[in-house]
Amino acid sequence: MKTSITHKLFLVILTAAGLAVISSALIMQWSLSRGFLKFINEMEKTGISRLAAELEGSYRTERNWEFLRRDPARWRQLVAAALPQAPPQPPEEKQPAGSQPERFDEGKRGPLPPHLARHFDQRLFLLDADRKSLIDQGEVPVDNAMTPLLYQGTVVGYLGLLPRTNITDAPHQRFLREQKSAFALVAGAVVLLSALLSLLLARRLVRPLGELTNATHQLTAGSFTVRVPVNSQDELGQLASDFNSLALALEKSELTRRQWVADISHELRTPLAILRGEIEALQDGIRQPTHKNIASLHDEVQRLGRLVDDLYQLSLSDVGALTYRKTGLDLAELLAGIIAHYRPEFFSKGILLEADIPETGGAAVFGDKERLRQLFANLLDNSLKYTDACGTLQIVLRTIDGVVVVDVKDSAPGVHPSELERLFERLYRVESSRNRSTGGAGLGLAICHNIVEAHGGSITAEISPLGGLWIRIELPGVVV
Image 1 (spheres, rainbow, N blue to C red):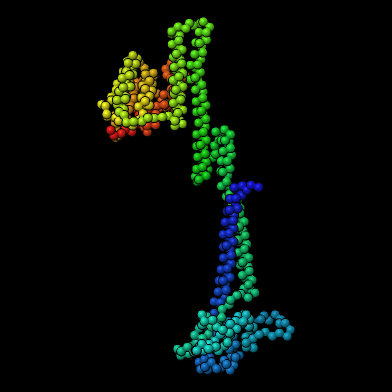
Image 2: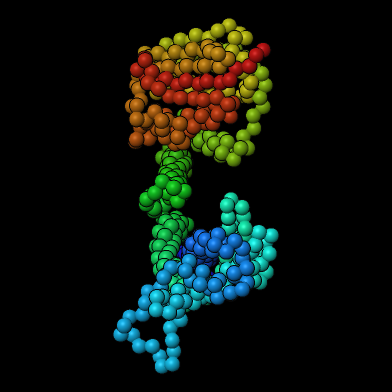
């Protein structure tokens, strides 16, 4: 039989609380018994001072202790005189037949005081000045407290009382039993209350775990919209918050995956549909295998090939299998060569290409020459495709505090600020219609992002002051 965590936690809390209560009750009972016995001994010592005064008075009269040896009854009379007077018997109370109340002085005193009834006098001892026993009550402990008896400033004897070692009186025992019963009753009530609180606390602590367990089962079954309430700021609350973050990330990942599959299907279906249509037209004789028609087929094959290559590059980057052969190189020289290659195409479209690049050797980086060439080629391709005719493209390269910064700014059309963060997502294009006449598959900037990150840099998108898009690339520089 499996024991739930609620029951385990309940038993742990209850056991700890029960042990604490029972231990406290036992310690209090022991302390009560010990303290009560000490209290009784202290109360009995109050009669010692009166008895000492009576003995000192008798000694002044007799000048020695011989009167106690000659008349042992005198000792009992002195003890009775020193002790508190007991109340007399009520007149209406009848004594048992043949019994006589014990009195120290007939006609004047009541019954024996309770101390003598409990053999108080039998625990008294009297020593002379040489500590020899005058009233022998057995062996006197060495460390027992004694009251010195004085005559004209000289010690003539010692009076002491042997302490009780246990409680034998019925009233005292009854009092202790009542107190111990009260302690036991209180301890039992506290244990029951602890059990109730432990159960409530265990359920309160385990409830979030149960909610997390159920939510985890739903998440495992593919329900990524499940969330758990965050009702506290402790570790359980943090765990619930982390679970919700995980569920949200999985939900976004699932949506991205579905969108990715749909976009890839769309991108692959379009060139394939064009290829199939043109090939069927050739097969049916509707179109002739002229140079122009074959060139159109070739363009679609190249477009499909570029898409497959881009997807392959992204997949290699995701699994960390994309190889980089990094060496020290001059980014200014590399960028100048790429700009020179693209300048005729920008000129033919009527776009002014402005480049502000320092002399050779002013922007050294440690990177892969081909990957960096691919990075800037993708950026120039985007500007070439999306910038309106008669526009402007500015490329500025400079080094700031050891960081090589490349700014690529083009003119209209621009991008809405809400779409800037999504530009580096795969297959994302600003045109919702995904019109292929103005752009590619939306993988170029995603590849650029991966290349920059692989070189330990950063790439960001902002609104260009020229009215278009501003791409900033920062790469760590090296000392040549």
